[in-house]
Length: 85
Image (tube, rainbow, N blue to C red; front, side):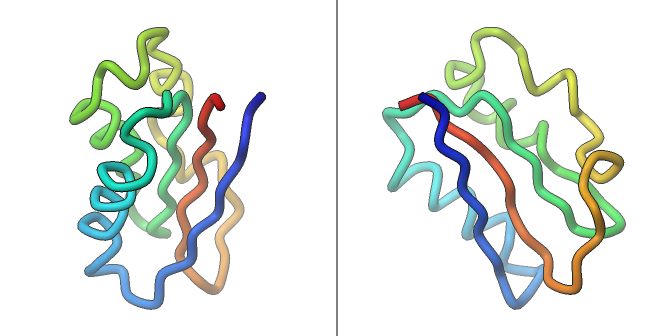
């Protein structure tokens, strides 16, 4: 079963740190197979998967390495990712 999560942050500057903390604390035992982080100008979806390569054994993040081209720009910045449960 795939579960999709959306997390909204007020400030861009804390996004990377907060998401890294979220992965470590909440989804350490889950397999993250798709991570897309849209910062408007910059996408860092592949950075987190490279930090946790065991979470993406199929290499699925390579399909959407530039996540910014696949997400509609929003007023608020957000994270979009899914986990296998």
